[in-house]
Image (tube, rainbow, N blue to C red; front, side):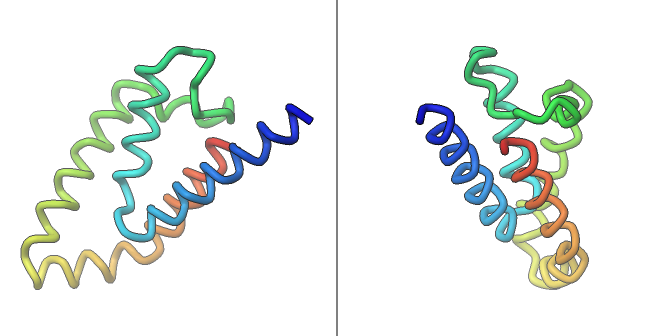
Length: 103
């Protein structure tokens, strides 16, 4: 029963992260990586061993820069529309990656 609950919670977290990637592509991945890196190892959100690289320093720097660029670009209408056009597929991939990382 406990294992079923654990799987249900990880699925709910994964779907929540995937849904939030529809608004901001990189912010949910950045928060996931920071929480997994700074929290105790027993509470690490990243379950997939193939996605442990999200916790690495280069990944955190890249995601942090992407978050700042994404939020800054959102303030300029022309850049925001171009970013929305480009980020359609990016948000889908980021959402899938976030979901797979925690499930």
